[in-house]
Length: 300
Image (cartoon, rainbow, N blue to C red; front, side):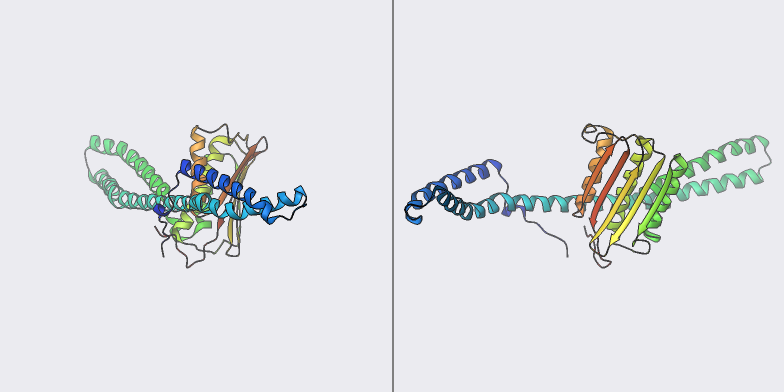
């Protein structure tokens, strides 16, 4: 059943909240100080009076702060999480649609064109035509390979067929061809586990972004990916490299920062958290995501 949050019930208006808390605190303290002589026995120590004063203030003000500050912030946090989740699910759905259209439309047309060129090349008796087609076929094959690579990048088919670990393994194989780094994949409790499709896609994107950053920016020679499922409580992700590192706070506003923001938003979308540490010894991306049971779904 999809989650719902009614934002209009607790609209957050900072100025009103600030004034409300100030007024409640002032009125409460005024009332407590007026009532204190009636509550505290004469001759009591200043410490005892302070304890009674603080206790009454806490009892009266705490519910006000809860309903005017904590509760609205909690609802905003939930609504943001749901918004991010639905946005990412919609994004992945659009990726799948574009992938299918490219594969079934442009991909099939390009394949037919290549087959036609080969047929003409094999049957034509005109040397000039054969020479032109001989030059065009490698170009068409190159375009076909680029298209296949783009389609695979939009949404790897192995993620739906083989699962998360197989998809990450294939991703590492692809990156190994474009990098001099040694890759290591270690999975514990996830090898034969299948999750909700949207959940697997989100986890895959976190690992993909982390690995791409390591390959493009870190100049690392060793990159390790670790996946560990602790019961049904949490899925732990760790991507570590021994590259040159960077300062996450200094990276704000750069191209790298957009990827870091995307990592945090994807973790937040399922109620998880992510930590990025970097220094001279390398960079580590650590994420802890709530582990979804097989029957649970991340619905849009």
